[in-house]
Length: 323
Image 1 (tube, rainbow, N blue to C red):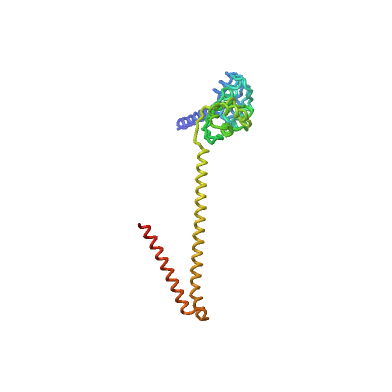
Image 2 (cartoon, rainbow, N blue to C red):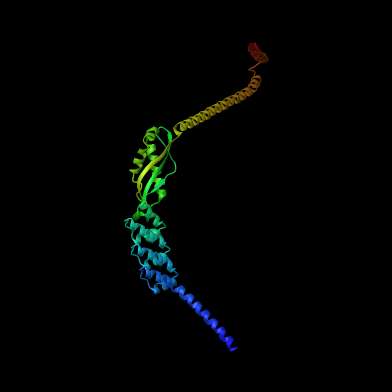
């Protein structure tokens, strides 16, 4: 019985020792501390324990710190930990500092962390600063003064400006400004032939406008990669205008015809109203004795004679037309 209790206690002790060793190895990363000391990085075990307590993985700080010290970059563990706690990319910052130092680019730790926290890839920015980048614009259409459409594609060579990376506009602004310059240059050309003969005129004009102002880049060159002739917009607009004028003229003619028809119908209505007054006038004349029966028959005879003449005249016209 005693032996059984003793055996159970020994197992508990062993488990406690193992658990304690695991906790000690977690909070005191001796292997990482030895590697840092071997690389010449003076870091204390208490600092590593403090990182664990602050929920900062020591490898995420120590390994970039070792890389920086080996490359001759003067940074401290506290600086890297502060940047990590600010949700920055410590490894990218260290790599950017190393690349900038090797390329003789003036980049401080504060600048690198500010660029990284601003949401830009600081390592890529240093690479673009060393090795310029080519940005190709989409096809940009513009119309010369002779009405011919011209489409151009430009390749813009840019270099990152480290000092303007924070707060500077990106590639979209460069493309928009270059497109605006191309449209302005083509639009001010007298003919499309001038653009086709001298495409470098576009490059010189656009480059002289200082389009990189307020951006994160310096424009090194603007090259026209392709120039094509599009539609004859001027002729198309003239055709559309002529069709619109024709429709307006037709509408006005229809309006005049409708007004004439309305006037004719109004005259007919007035005539019918006047004819309706004739029997009344004749009846009044009979009552007053101003018109006799013989006068009435004479009027009817004149009307009959007139109708007969009209009938004969219409018949003869019809005969002639049939012949």
